[in-house]
Amino acid sequence: MGNSNSSLYLSARLDKLRNTQNADGGWAFYARKTNSWVEPTVFAALALHGQPEAQRAWELLRGWQLASGGWRPTGDVPGANWTTALAVLLGVKVAGQADGQVAKGIEWLRNNAVDGAWAWRRGSLPAAEPTALGILALRSAGIAHSAKDAEGFLLTDKLTPETCGPALVGLQGSSQIRGLAPLAVRWAEETCSPLTRAWIQIGLRVNGIDVAESLETPLSPNLAVVALEALAAQDGNHGLLRTEAA
Image 1 (spheres, helix red, strand yellow):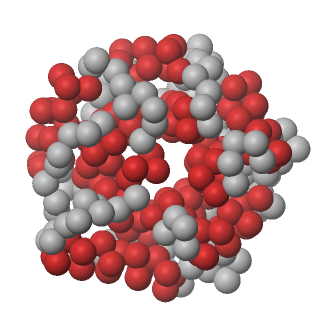
Image 2 (cartoon, helix red, strand yellow):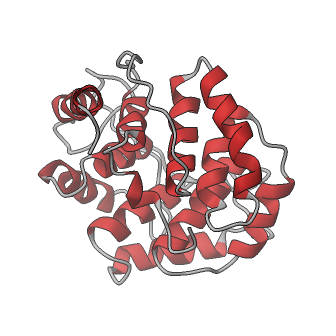
């Protein structure tokens, strides 16, 4: 367990999430906004995994799945996109991969990979973050389909501080991790972005690499960032993003 300061850091973020859950069970990107979105909802539900708030979030997302198996990013957007990987990840953790809706989401991911990688939306070019999260969702469900090609994409795509953390999550188990770790640690120390720092910390932790806490970081107004910081904390639920490949 972490020290008292790290416990306070984590509890402040979990309290923030509990206090900002919308009436529909989801989260907006910012407090006092009632339009819930998949991205902050999934990250918040993972941070609060095992608690009633997470179950409520999953019940909301069940209603956002399309007949194709993909998930719309929010309730009033008609098409599915990359956030399907997030919904599948949460579904696996809450309902299990045998759940019918989760299984349909998995099939959507498998059908929408392009040379093993994923794009932000259909018709656009593959990108690091949706690819990393696509790998994570499938591996969390015990499926390695397209993962080898997707790993190749992550290794050949030019990493930046912003894409480094998600890429480390997607590359779990790769022999390249140890070589990337020093650069990732440096980027985490140098970045001014709490989002980038949280993702890199998660990426390092799921690969078993210790990383310094950033306990002086104030609470972000962005609830997705708050949730990712909670996941990245020493005693946070980052283990939910760890796969058997790590």
